[in-house]
Image (cartoon, rainbow, N blue to C red; front, top):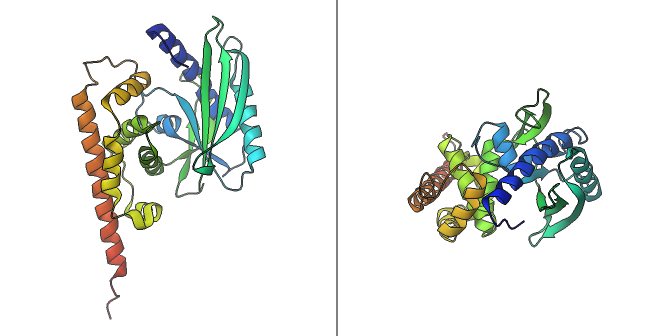
Length: 278
């Protein structure tokens, strides 16, 4: 949805904040244990990271054992259960659309109209990956801050979320600015990707990772970053907390941190190659 003024933007944010947490919580009332996990903004919120960050879409990590047809049913059933009277009318769900990178990435679009007639689009993205103790944990998830009841949900661990943000930066440009912002928030909160996890994820590209990430970060323009993050953090105002200088500091923080992670992973790998004493 292309918003032409602040009123439209705030209204869209309101719809996203109402529906997406309900959808995230509702999915787990139908999914089997180890089948799905929350990733992205809702997963970060469930763990206390970037609490003011608004939700733009819903990201899921999906086990390879979950058949495409079942995943599609779960998403559509979840969307239906997330809607309340007065949210949206004439809703429809399209997808899944497979990303150019293959069937490992899928996306659904939910379209509808607010009572005032304005059109709204929300997105649900899914990526295949392992769901086990190394990638997820169980967390309580509230459909909204005012809800007394909460649901148990499987949520990606912060270090795994950080890995997926790295992937998004490298895939760019779509979503790369948000990924940079999320990764910086995780780093500032003390999150780090363990050496063995990074080595397993990156493989032979470990040596080149710092340069590759720096190239990906440099492809993100200040204008794109400003526009994307103002939508995520509507309480910020241009020229105040969010400036080109802030943008530059976040880029440096992410690039320097990833470089440190890569160096530790390389050193760890070299230590593993040393012969055992005796």
